[in-house]
Picture 1 (spheres, rainbow, N blue to C red):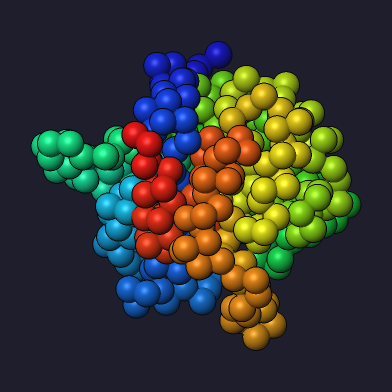
Picture 2 (cartoon, rainbow, N blue to C red):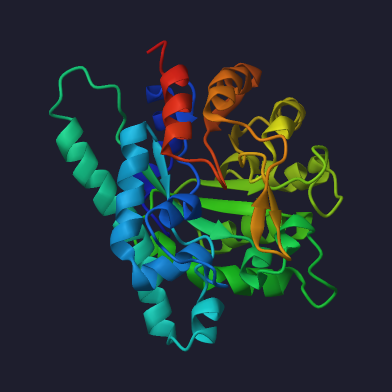
Length: 330
């Protein structure tokens, strides 16, 4: 069977975690930062719209996160799907080209930053890895189902694999260092991701991160024990965790995951603000500032997290605070 990705990178995530002193830093909110630079993303394609309109802003945001200390750049492909691009009148070829561009923009930013910083004596940076973002099926639907896991009876395992397959192939071929399956809301989609990695013989490491709306279970109501049993059987998935959940859930979920898996644990919560889908605005709710992220990053690391970053509404200053405290011992 043809291998997807390079065999030599299979342990690249483990190596990075080790170089980072046992806990590597993921970047932060992407759409939030794009909007700060004037991008308009009120669109079903969300931040993927910038791949078409403002690719220079994507590269700028990647560079800002690298400067802030991110060890891993997550690409702008979370909501970049071939069906989504087709619905906007693009061809399959144009859609695939945009997926390819999402990896290239991150790789170019990483290489530009690293070429400059490695000349600086005593710098405290690592050569970042590029994680190709694969948002859940619910993210493509843009109907909130990545936070409910309710895809309906018509969506089965094969449909989910078919939905993700071509995007995964393109992102791996584009040269990503790893794959990041994000805001997975149910056991079925986790199973689809695991089977797809096997069927496509993907050689680069992957992580699978769930969201959670109650701090206890997957959004579908299924237990993380059920979800992780499937993931634990895969040696292609190197890390599991939580993204885009409120930060006050994270400590308890790390402890839960520690009991359920031997894989590295990744956490990158949102700021704690709540998105009002009807009025299309953020509502303050138990919001974490950068100072709290700095405080809790060490707690999350000490509880067992190996990858820590931020999701919606976090910024480069959040990642700078996390990086500063996690790399203090180095």
